[in-house]
Image (cartoon, rainbow, N blue to C red):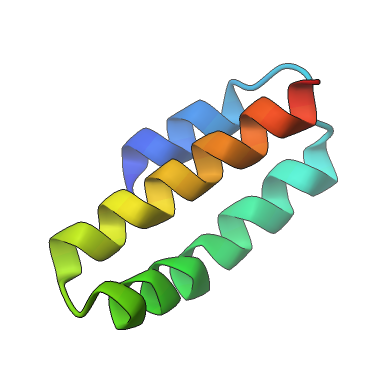
Length: 61
């Protein structure tokens, strides 16, 4: 997993430990799926990171 995403997840105060671990464990699968959708490694990684950011924003609300 990208260290940037791992760092953001581990420092996200509002989420409990099990939810953070779930996101970290599933990130690889999410990245593969996003790469499949975009047909491009770089765009897939960007899409996966944006998806995690949206999850974090929604979870906070």
